[in-house]
Image (cartoon, rainbow, N blue to C red; front, top):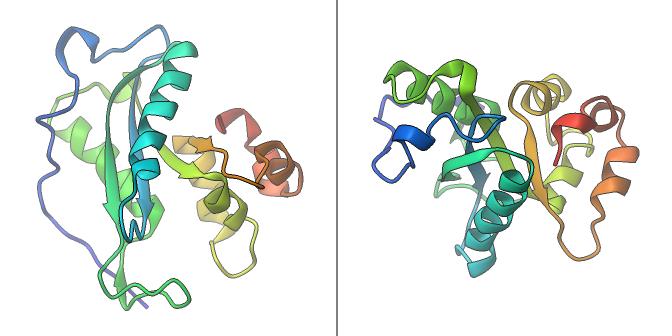
Length: 170
């Protein structure tokens, strides 16, 4: 499988910047959701609002969010030929925002926004690279929205990596 790299500028015009860019007491957060979004639904968008509300209650300032859809060739049962891993997407967003000087690296947290179905897939053998799951959770953090029948606490307790990183999963 070939991992693709793109040098396309990251759109930033709709991010909340300026005096709020340093965020609440805990800093600023940019949310990133990855997936097929085929089709994008109201709930995909609503996840951003739910995550923003939760993070603001925890003292963060949410600067904005990005949806990173997978390649058109993606089929849920087989990974597409050209892709970017979720970790690469999160790193690109963080590096791009810090490189442009829009935000200070020390006050920025880029977090993966997902549904509990995706969080559950972190523990499915062969779906994710365990070291990348650990890095996503520890270095970025995960904000997870519960989906029907998928209990976040149970998913975390059933996974050694998620248990290890549980303080970074909201």
